[in-house]
Image: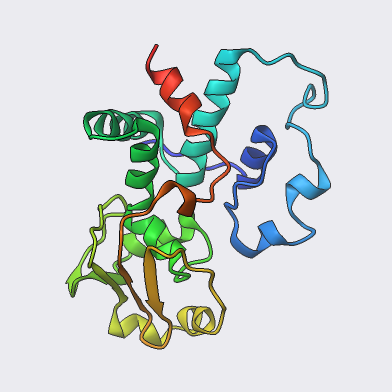
Length: 206
């Protein structure tokens, strides 16, 4: 599947908010939003009137870029959320949060979702003791996500073990063991991404 390979900071500038795609850089003065808080391109600083459709599209693009996926895959998540009971927008965010790569990131075992995706693909993690190398793997309540024993000797992970992590309340983490567990399903108030999921539902409902 084709994937965006350009500068990550350009995506944040296009959306006008921090999408936290580059780990520590996003919290520093080097962040593109801090230095150039306008859209990329020669017309980026021009005033533009945004329509209702434009607002809906921007929310969808933000969500796609935060979780690192293309349109076809994102649309599948929407239809799956729509089939479930409850509020479609919240169901969509829950499905996205329960992706293995996102959980690895939320546990503080990677600096960004893109790094987490790469680490999962390179088979650094197990789920309930079994090797899983699929970033989109849907974890469930009580699943234990752990760093493989061979990977614990890496300087990369040793450094991460010393970094304090603000873990959402639906997860628990043991940095000494480099593992975490899903202790509940994420609720909307636990998901801190800057996205209005209602606008995404309105866009796909047309």
